[in-house]
Length: 528
Image (cartoon, rainbow, N blue to C red; front, side, top):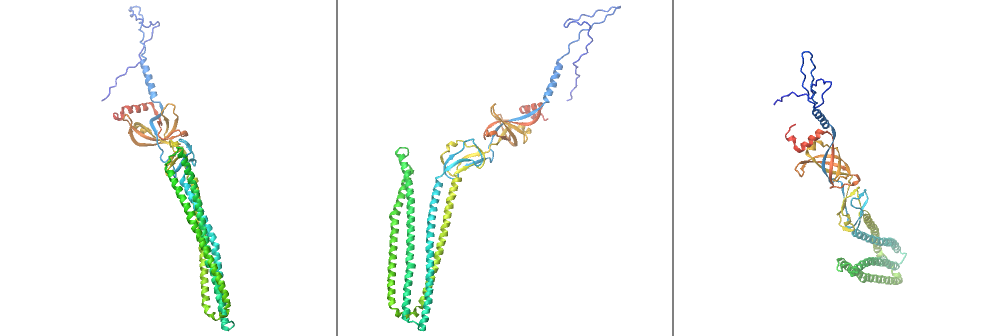
């Protein structure tokens, strides 16, 4: 349809010249005088009508409104915001071992990396350390026993080497005697008696070196066992004293009515007391007397061996009386001398093996002692590290009601508090979907809590998501993610407020059009 252009009237009119004496405003204009043929008079014009000022005012208003509509200003997109959890920004502090925890920080307290946040008292670690100390003491006692036996083994080897040397010397001598008998230098009977005397002497030495020495070693071993039993009895006695002390304390509290008399801890302590008393009595009444009886029996064996030695000496004296009969038996004893050497060689080799075993025992006990000391040191180090909890990162303590955890028993692996770095907090902003085209990453924003006196927090747009939801009235909203600079860590996750996002300059008519479009949805009806 073609529009018809109508001529517009000009707001200005042509006004004729005014008369020298214009009539007052509002006075009726007199009719013009009639003209005479002779003397024509000038015709008086009526006064000009007043200019219509409304058109001028309207023009000024139109110009003013147009100027205002074209004025630029900084546009802000407003939306409701809620601070969310920052992914990966929280540090969970868990207890590494069961025990009583003592909290060293408060909720919302700012901590630095490596600060102590809690201390743990663990009976489990203390018991492990006590066990490790007992094992270390046992290793020390075993090492001492092995080191004490080492000189005995060395002495046995020395004696065996001496005996072997003697045996070889006697064998050489026997050969010389045989040669002497063959040559006729000595009588055979003398040689025979001398050989029997030497055999008897060897038997005496064997009794000394083998029987008596072996019994002495067994006595030393039994004495060490008695010492070990006495040490164990002393340790059990200390444990019994500690149990009786704890039991007496709990029974006293029960007698005062401050503690239930049938408490399982009292029953457990009574059981421990009975068990420890039974063990002490068993060791002091049964084991130690038996061991001492064994020592007396061994000492009796030594006396018997000494009596046998005395008989051997008497036999030697008798053999000396028969010295004349020895020479005829010298040749028959040649093989016996060789066997004697073989025996002494075997005895020397056994002594060498025993010495090597004794040295290996010493090294083994040293290794066990080193391991026991290492385990003790490891547990003591663990007490210093695992039982003093430090935060690996700096941040703010988020956990509420920490006072309820203080001085309570916590199981291993249980979380006691959380720490997060709150210097930069993420937030989700809900804006009108119509403002989506105005939002870009990196835009500056201002976050404020609900309330007129709230402080302002600087923020920046991180992401414009594709998440769309609706508000209470059913209008679509777009989710925008921002990052808030949290001055002095005053904000916490879950805090709600408002955000104003600076989207750049916009003219007034554009803002009006945008807001009207939000309400009337003009884009649905006007394609431009």
